[in-house]
Length: 326
Image (cartoon, helix red, strand yellow):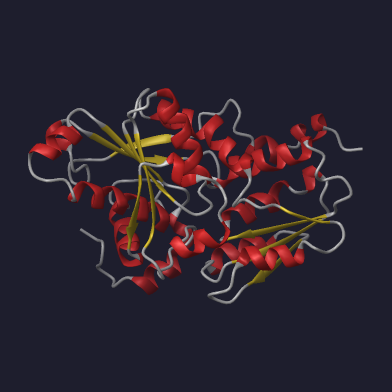
């Protein structure tokens, strides 16, 4: 009988367990990217992937830990997960420690070849890639109906929110020097944005947290547009946020590449999307009174979920050679 002590002693689980880790690093931007610098504002790219491979690592650990403690894995031998890549990777890495023999991953059409290749290289992992326009979540539900199969539904799992409430939120606060006023976070499953918002606003009600997602019908790896979110996300993210900003796929890739001039390790396209959301929000402020009120002495942050090196083919395919370069 598998016990919690054995699971927690597993070296991969230890690597993915966020408890006690300072995993968020703030990269403070220069005046070139910090649009409120002249008013004394500060802006930071928040990087978790020097400690974890991506921001989904602590969320996946928390979801699987909560499900194990609730006895939901009893009699199960195969775990099924719909994903755009990062949650799939995290599940594949720690599934064996939680007693699963096999992992079945349903990937979205925009998963890069490099990410798909990493998953294919792992033993006991089987991947299915759904065509563009079809739902990974619905396909995963069908697969999970087989005996002994367990569906890990990140789009409605409270553990997804709890991970970011318990760990990511406090880490954002610590990395920003103990305080932060505005946050911009990409929306996919919405767990990161909801958990971080609940933590930050629970500590200080006047903080503002904005979700950022692609324009309707446009695709950015790792995040979902409004219709895609409405189809599968049941986490109550709207109640936690102060607003939702939509940006184009092109702007997401351009701003990602712009960030590479200042941020190392280099962030991915959903990071560029979050940064583009910050810039779009700033551009809507009226000059100069609204800007002074919004910026004076404030700290802004946006989370960078993963490493841009996984998206080289998308970047070269999406952008002209000099787009986003200084």
